[in-house]
Image 1 (cartoon, one colour):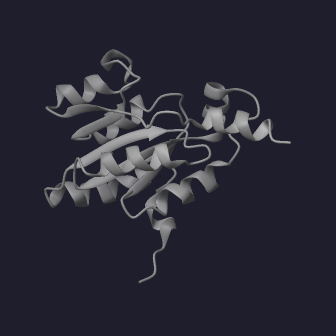
Image 2 (image 1 turned 135 degrees about the vertical axis):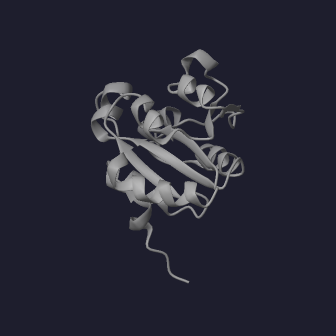
Length: 163
């Protein structure tokens, strides 16, 4: 079986909306998580896999290159948005990747209104963008344990220190 991962990548909500409407009409549940996903590692895979188990479809909100630079600083992202989106879309447990230009996905979450919103436990509930939208619509906010000892920033630092 061949996969066309590009069909899972959306540059805005409007291009994704017909897919969402189809899923909703089928009675499917929607899980949403987001991040920069710059240099994907096993911690990302673990959280995405756990997120996908919380509903029928997993949507990943992906920060644009410009928003990653604002959040992480000069020199980031290491991989451009097209590469990051393709890597995420290649996972069979990711159903859609939607690129967003803002620093947080709050606007995108208001448009999608997921049944489940997922972030890591390093965030308190009040720090999770879009949590109000989800809770006001009878959804759930899940905070997952992270894989300890791994982060993209740490990986970049280790790579810079290689001899």
